[in-house]
Every structure is written in C-alpha cells, then in structure tokens.
Image 1 (cartoon, one colour):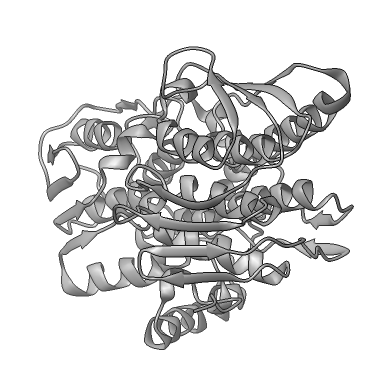
Image 2 (cartoon, one colour):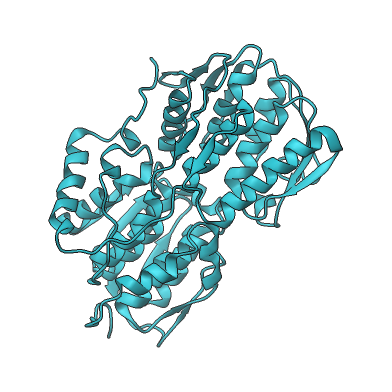
Length: 421
C-alpha cells in the first residue's frame, strides 16, 4: 500500500493524538509561549530531496543549528565536485548527513567526493548501507577502516532494483536508500532482513517523499519506490522540532514553570518524538514504566532523567543502537544518574533504575561526552533539582543553539527543591 501523506508520527492512534491534545489544552491558557527550532531531521531530508531534484525550493524556516549548516555545506561540495574534481566534505559529528549523503552522492553522475568527520562519526557503522548501494551499482570505497567512514564516492546513474538491508543498527540506512531511489533506473524494491530501529523515521521519510510527488509502497518488511522526479514546492515549510520539545515537557514534569511551546503541530506531526508527552504522562500516571523505546531513542535521555527525579522506577528496552550515537548514551545516562545517587543497571540494550535516590556527590559535574541530548537532559535537571552542573554546554549548538536562552525563560522564579537532599 502507499504510505499516506501526513500519517501521524509512529503510527499514533487517534486516542494517542487525543491524549496529546488534552495535555496541551490544559496548559494553553496558563503557559507563555517560547519558540522551538525547526526540525533538523525533516530539514536534512528536504535538503537531500532538493539536491536530487535539482530544484531551487526554499526550505523555511531553516534550522539554526550546526547539523543543518554541515549538511548544506556538504551538499555544496558534492555539487562542486562534478566540475572541480575530487573534494572532501567534513561532516564533523553529523551522522544523518553521512548516511543520507552517501546514497545521494553515489546517485549523482560525475560526483567525486570523500565524506569524513570527527573520530566518533567514523566509528558509526556504515557497512549495511554501503553494501546495499554497491548492489545497486554504486562506486564506493572505504578510505579507512572497512565498514566505516571516510568513504570515497564516485557518482553515477544507479541501476537499483531488488535490494536487502539489515536496518537493526539505523533506520537512516533505509531512509537514505528511499530518498535516492527515484533517480535509479529500476527504482527500489527493498526487503528488510530485520526489524528496523527508529522505524518512525522511515515513515517520516515516506510521508515527505509522498508530499514531493514520490509515492512509497510498504508491505510489512518490504518498501518499494518507483523511478520518478521529485516535484518540490517553491517553499517547503519545516515543522518545529519535537525532539527539542521533549526537554520542556521534562521541565514541566520536574516542577518548573516552563514557557512551553504549544501549537497544533503535534496533532499532525510526522516526527516520531511527538509521542513523548503521551509516554511521560502514562509513566507518571502508572507510577512505573517498562517500555520498548527502539522506535523513539532520541527521547530516552529526557525520559530517563525525568522519571528518576520524579521517583518513578523504569526499565527502557531495545536500546542497543544508543551505544552508537554521538556518545554511548546508555553508559552516559547510567553514569550521570549514578552521580545523582541512583542505582542503575545498564545492559547491552536496556537501562533500569529503581529511582530511589541514595548518597551522592555534592554539586556533581555531570559528564555529557559532548553529546547535545545528554547536555540538555541533565541541564533541565540541574535547573529543576539544583546541586549539579553539566559539562560541554556548547554541544547544544549541534541541534538547538537557542536552548540555553529558552531554558533561562522556563526557570521557576520561585524555585523548588525537587531532588535535593
């Protein structure tokens, strides 16, 4: 069947959407409004579609963050390489750009580019995507360790056709193939050999492609994209970032008085992380949480920190791929929560906490490993609970440069003693 455009994120039921709307309506009249950045996940996919279409579509608002700046600069390098010869694009820590642009650059005849980044980016797995693209006819070589960036890519018109991929490490492997497939001679018939992680982002990509005139067929473990031409609008409007919104729901749940952003966007958002307030509400209502979070991994840091400080025991599962993000987020979360006095068990794909706070460091400096989501999750805790600090505050520039300014606005002027001992 074709993926319907604007399908609710994560395939949310009408009941879930209704719950979100009720949560919003309770707060609308009492809470001032702050702005959130535009979604970098959506914007980066739109930039790739624009590149492959050759259009002059305007993408607005353009997210003001490092990741989108890196993506835009890399696209310029890819385009210039057609006439200038071999060029190198430094993607720094932008994993989305690495995955999506590998497929896009390989599909544009005449490109000759090496995609690289900081050491952590070059540790993130690429072999499933590279092997699938090679099967489609791509010319990609590993410039360093096999299976990882740097990658040297010689673009050509790809054949495409029947491919298979293991998407258990990243849904971006699938999104990258989908976005490039309309330019391939035979399009794409993709079979998933394992259940994908973050599958909501595959739906998001499919919905965006549908809005650009490229229907995507899905049948359980199969995805099909026919050859075609992207029909980009004159202006593509990017919705606000629902991942960023989660940190202000965290602030609200931790007793602060947030100037929470509220709009009707969540009712029709294609972003998986729009479900965060529902998950949080259910955990607080039930007094515990045991959830598989493989499809919404980016909201695990604010969720885990919130539940711990609210005294709600939790087990969050299906998270092996969090070990391959900007840092090993499972270990980073466990370390940070232990610094706050919580007993945490961290396994290969889960994190568990009984949320009973014991002896802990006085005014601990939480190590965030230069990971923007870890910084923001613990920064909200620092403002709500007091007695802790976070390192690497500049890391928020990756996705949300305005975070500190907005956090200043949400702080309770009356103060609270949540989590203090």
